[in-house]
Image (cartoon, rainbow over all chains, first blue to last red; front, side):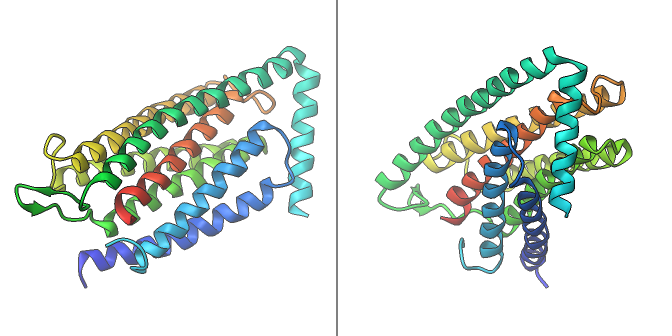
Length: 64
Length: 209
């Protein structure tokens, strides 16, 4: 097992865990009002996008 | 059920700080708007460098560019993906830290905040490892110049963020914040999410595209 494979596997597992948790946090944050809550929603949504990108990278769909 | 409980908590907190300190309630919104505008200004700064990178990249005949007749290798995606998850994970732990503070669970707040600080520091170590193992230099090519400038600027933001979080940890444990007054913690959480999100774009532009 190469170092790259270990890194990709850890990245994949981490991305699923972090992305899933961020999605739950976003769901809980959705009904909350206020500027800070709205900004947090946008930022959490983009962070979930980052996790999706990391999953695609780990699966060799994106990147080298 | 969980959502309504959370809303009830937020409403209770709102009502509490309105009752306890009306001046704080009024100035909090002004300070929050100012802080969000400051983040917006930071966004413009990053956008300028990102568009400069996009211009350099799209106007080059090949990417990564050639230096002394040899094309530079692509960056290591595997390690970058793992390091990205470390940073994104820190965003999740920071969010939990703030939620626990709102629910007056100080021990849990401390635990999540320490986890955030550790993950932020780990990301910086990972970035240092990337720099040391990079096949390019700052001066050698437009790729190297863009990479080190943008990721360096981001790394500096993370470094400042780690110091900011350590400061928040000390302040929170010295009683600067209460269950109804915690603007610094809210601002810290938004700042930390912001550096996470900037990395989403840099990760895509430098490693995946």
